[in-house]
Amino acid sequence: MTIPPLRRLLLLRHAKSARPPGTADHERPLSGRGRRDARAAGRVLAKADWLPDLVLCSTAHRTRETWELAAAELAGLPPVRFEPRLYHPPVPQLLAVVHEVPAHVSTLLVIGHNPSLRDTILVTAGDGVGRRVRQVQKKFPTAAIALLAWRGTWEELDTRTALLTGLAVARAAP
Image 1 (cartoon, one colour):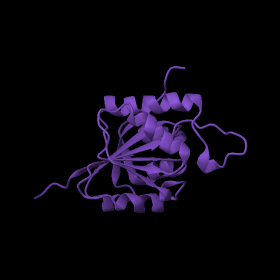
Image 2: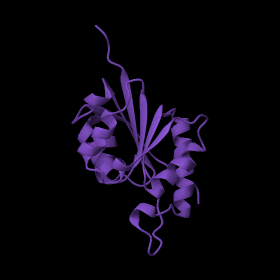
Image 3: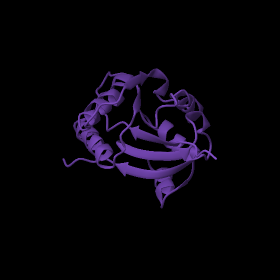
């Protein structure tokens, strides 16, 4: 009997954004705190050994900036694809993007927005280690990172097929 491969999906909510007057939502940049927290998110990924083989990032300015700053804290840079379908998608659309990931990718990082990320965690996580699912039910704040794991293919990620095995909120000192 062959054991299906372990898949890891990291979901990173963009860091805290600014709201400059007259700026369209898609073009909002990170705030000062957001820039610090984005760097801290990179340090969290590196320290936890949550290093992706591929990054899929929303096209919004704040998500691209979050990735740029987080990536600067990583030893190696995985390929990144900026995906317009990750800008505030419903859960089925986010999962459709994940289902397209090539089979050779073991760990995928998706950088996006709430409520899409939070809802995806709650739909796909059949369970969690400790109180993690309850924490996400309460709040999935900016610069939060969730790690979902399951054995199977990317196409098999669906309702209650994964385990929420990690949860961190990246915060830098002011």
